[in-house]
Image (cartoon, rainbow, N blue to C red; front, side, top):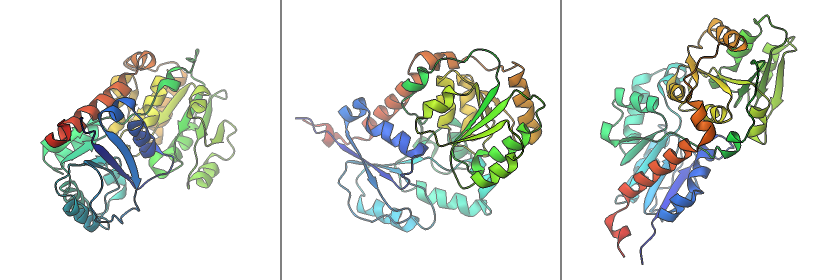
Length: 337
């Protein structure tokens, strides 16, 4: 009888955000479960218990930091013969620019953390290029697997006809997303018949509402329990993020057949190949210009979104990449009859 190995996914962020959606998609895949038994285990951030884990392969979806390094090193020592994989969901060049006061110290932490793993998964090609440029680990240790979720429901959303009149900003109301600059730029648009719908919750909500005060074209829609509802209600999606490892909203928007405008930072650059309009959105003038072009019908794009509308190409690539990675890490003894 062939032994089916256990793959244990360690998570320290169980909020209803992108990380858990990706992990849930991974561990519930029938094809991946046929190859190995994928399970998740929640751990406290920065407080890993250094004990042998009941798994053949360990996959970290943890947020690396200095406080958690001793526990990570001890965990590696306690599971010395088991393959360990880390998925880097958080850190990028843009993250460093906006959040890191001491880059050399930050990069040293990442190099020490990555050294604990046999494979480091980058969630976008742009992130992988940054990892290599910063020599965070051996280039051969990095595997690029673009994040994904089940996009079937987004492909079923009817395509919107006519000009762009309703722009959507979808995601956590957090400084990362750049919604403050978006609101300021949108307020400069002269057209009275355009609107900005903001979907999400977060600590920046009060400040964003204050920024939008007095403009009846800006609407806060709150948290969309069914994500498809947000995409169904808008003509275009704009992502002026300050940093973004990949951006699930982007592939959801493209699968829904919506015009997508992305900042040219980090993993958002990957979406140009799928039909996104990737352009500088750092200054408010850049954002206002992109909005006005879209409202005028000058959207450009590469046309790749048509493929995402008709076939599960991103889901297939994600699942196959994980199948290949797990197969490469299954010890010969686990495959023996």
